[in-house]
Image 1 (cartoon, one colour):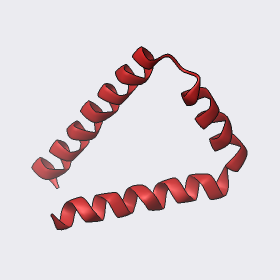
Image 2 (image 1 turned 45 degrees about the horizontal axis):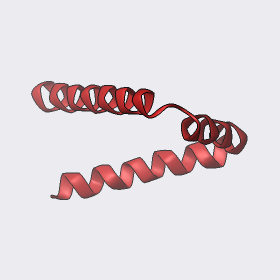
Image 3 (image 1 turned 180 degrees about the horizontal axis):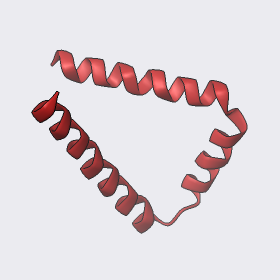
Length: 63
């Protein structure tokens, strides 16, 4: 459970840094995401989850 809370905190830190460093770019990215077809969003979400799980697996195996 502590790892989950730490991961959520890290995600917020990274997102906050991106919004602070690139506010216009993040606004454009959110606009594009809001106007993307649902199917594309679903595929990107699934691929992101798979990549994230892969990263976690590698870190847990070799870290």
